Length: 224
Image 1 (cartoon, rainbow, N blue to C red):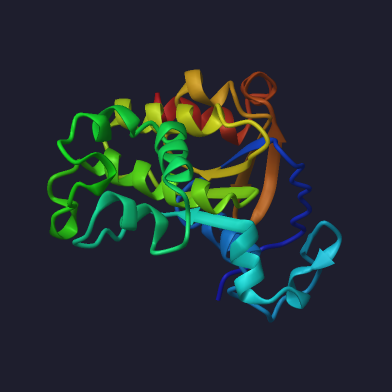
Image 2: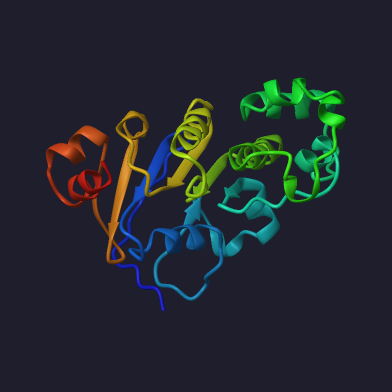
């Protein structure tokens, strides 16, 4: 059973949040609560003052996109892998490719967005697969994007580039769970939430957390 205690967070529209903490601290449980996976909890979770228990699951997924470590890609065109057979214009597909940083790769392919993705996308790298997942969520225009350890299995340089891409998207509320504590990227978050034993033990921007020499400071020094 997962225990979270005294969690009080207000995610503001368009701001960028990082959630950090050691393994098993409760980071992913927060995300599962936001996504309506659990109903048996005390307290209240609201989006625009509407209790998420009163929001249909489909409507919730129109508001929130989640990108996880494993991205499912199927043996079909790039276009269909991004649109997931939804009715989007070519312009919308190309726009989502540009925002997710895939446009250069796709433009080098002989058939562009009509190029075929091989089974399990073995003709693309792990980082490129993550970008496809980002493009999928951007085309849906969900106002909230969550990355749940999405870059854990890809190399550090690529994961920095992917986070950078996401942090550059204005008007998108971003919540990133990560254990990769790079100063260059952490400095760009509006707020970093530090979870320890199911509670928010610290929060603030990068500099204030480093200066307070608490749990974040310890995690950061172990990583770096």
